[in-house]
Amino acid sequence: MTDDLPLDDAFEEHRRHLFGVAYRMLGSVADAEDAVQEAWLRLRRSRESEAAEIENLGGWLTTTISRIALNMLRSRSTRRTDSLEERLEHLPEPILEREGGGDPGEEVALADTVGLALLIVLETLSPAERVAFVLHDLFAVPFDEVAAVLGRSPQAARQLASRARRRVQGRAPQADADPAAQRAVVDAFFAAARDGDLPRLISLLDPEVVVHSDLGAGVLRSQGAQEVAASALRYAHPDRVVHPVLVNGAPGAAIARDGALFSIMAFTVAGGRIVQIDAFTAPDLIGRLAGDPALPDPGPRPPR
Image 1 (cartoon, rainbow, N blue to C red):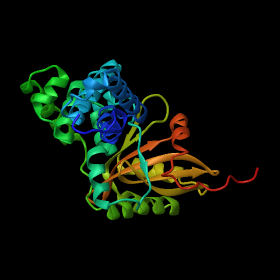
Image 2 (image 1 turned 135 degrees about the vertical axis):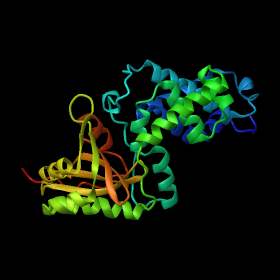
Image 3 (image 1 turned 30 degrees about the horizontal axis):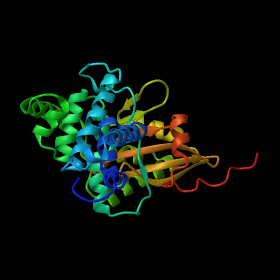
Image 4 (image 1 turned 30 degrees about the vertical axis):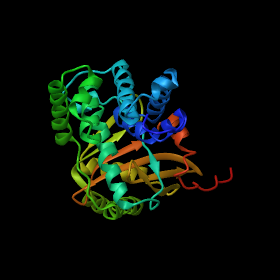
């Protein structure tokens, strides 16, 4: 290593970066945390004298966690098809943050590289394509190092990243740059739903807006402003309280019912309209997220 820090302290300096790499590759907080733990165990299994000889610990760890994530991706059962709807078998797990608690510029950068719209498209890539794209396009890892992770030639790694990039650019919508403007659109959406204003709702939605929901088995998908607006009116019950929250760096909402977290909704706003909504209601996920410190107190449960 390049400093005199103990091995565990040196690893901790890289933990956030390693989690970021693994989460973008795996789309799961739990899997990313497992990958980080495995990277630590692999480093620890090396004798400290051997670890001390690593000239670039950050690079070594990035390579190691990328190989771990690649193996985890390969172990998942995937179906190969050109249809995004058929290939998307689950939604990536969201990361929540309090709104207004950080630098708006950092929030925009986070949403650009870890937004749910991007992660959903990454779910449809092959393991090698995803690893190549994340390492090179999101973390600027040179292709010779990407090739070492994949066990391919640098030219093959370049081709994998290029193919993934074309798919991402063709399918992942680019959100507007101003978080405040995005929040205004999201707030207007909930206000129109609460007021039962169908024309206003439709005006806030892109004509080809897409909704992903984790209800039931797999991912349900609906499309079109009319259908989405009508659904929003059906679910706009007065007993549901909407709390603003950042979901993967973008304006979203935590919805409480009867004093308990009911769902998380993430929005992608482009051109001043909502182009994608990702809704999370699965009980196991909601149960894990309910204690997230980024969430406000949902309020007391009503007496029964």
